[in-house]
Length: 488
Picture 1 (cartoon, helix red, strand yellow):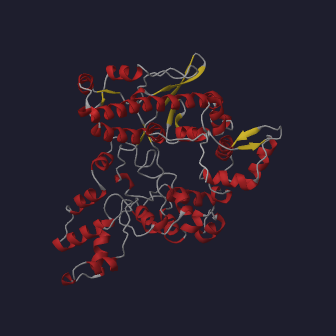
Picture 2 (picture 1 turned 135 degrees about the horizontal axis):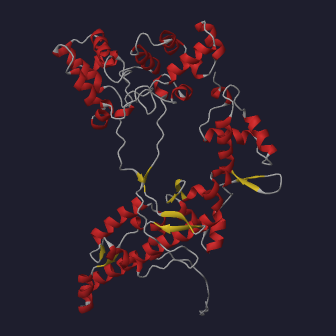
């Protein structure tokens, strides 16, 4: 075989450690970034975090956003707590339909019948005690024998955070030591004592029993309370499905009486233990971007509170300057890693700011008029304008948040599909959802709008949307179907 030399030119994409770190930092949320930094600070003595005005100056010396991006400005706004929806009570004999009927309010919520005094002791107590502690403190005051108190405490431990007894009395009796010879009837008696404690409805085994206990705790002279108890015990599915015709026949009443009964039942609390479920403040949405209107222009700026203040440790840097022999190789590698980290963090926030400002420029109508003015937007539009890859924009907009005069939004929120209009334009899916929500809020509760009617109304406005699309958007907004929204 004849040997020969040949020259070949080829292009290869190599992910250097610095590039890999840059990609990793870009996709982290602020909380995850801080966790990552803490581990790096412990592992690398050359990197240190500083606080105060000096720290802000340290990192901003080499930080210069793109010319078209807004200049970073400190933001003093506190992090906004994330909204959480209450879980549905499917496991309590109800279901989504049941819960929808009773989620409108409760006697222990603001605006309820028992919320006249904002400084009511029960609210202060709930803020300081767990549900278990609250129940045990009441049990100790009851004139019970030691055996009965012990059984009551056993039942309290079986009550979940919503206030329901999860296990049957027979199962609990089997779990107790045989030598105690516990009869389920004894547990039934102990449960009756618990069900007479505060809050009303505690210790119920299903939703019907929970609501019935609360109704029986009302004054006997409460209008229509007996009819309400009958509905809670026997006809909850009919009330949940708004089958008012059958309810009127079963209760032998007219519309006015049925409406009073409905209001009496729906003001009850389906989660009597919920007020004792302490929602801690350790889960916050920390916004990276603040949007403000400055001289008629919507401007995005960095939230300085989330930008880590990092610098090179001057003591070790001085050692490296004086000693550059083989013994300092470890410190030199740590120095390089520290420089990479500082540069990559600067690049991370610079990219977030550029993408955010581009989003604000396109969605300025949203900031002026709300969701109904949201325009269709896809990742590629921002990527093409800023000269970034689409995957980079996706990483930037995931789990990064923007504080606006209308609330806190994830950057991803401003992107969405579009629906064609008769004029040949496009309407954002977010805007259509906002229109659906607006129409439902203004509808006649006695004759709620069906999906077909909403489709026709949008069609008259030049927005062509299929009925199944309207149904999908309505369900995403957690708006029940028309027959579920009907009221007297």
